[in-house]
Image 1 (cartoon, rainbow, N blue to C red):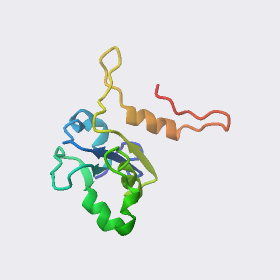
Image 2 (tube, rainbow, N blue to C red):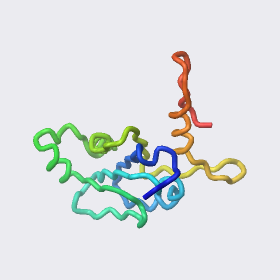
Image 3 (tube, rainbow, N blue to C red):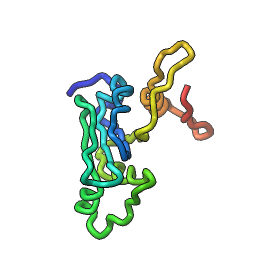
Length: 137
């Protein structure tokens, strides 16, 4: 898929989750150009529902144990630290992570705020050794 979204081919979105990802519908316009890595916490037999149209990989505890073997203990669960596995399997230069209970904020005018886009702009804005821009505007 060709996209004009900034860093679309260099950025993965990592989401740890214990629930269905219906919340992604709110983020669709902002996240759809990007690859998403979902790390399912909890019972690996439970099927996590992900809305259609997203490019994603889904991993659960069984996958982590299969891939890491006797080192799987280093990925803790039941505390959203399972996202670390998503960092490990990503092959992209940048990783944006978001929890499954984060929703799109609105300006006082009602306009939706694209936090991902603002984060990317900050990453691409040169900084000096005395100041690093990491705030959302």
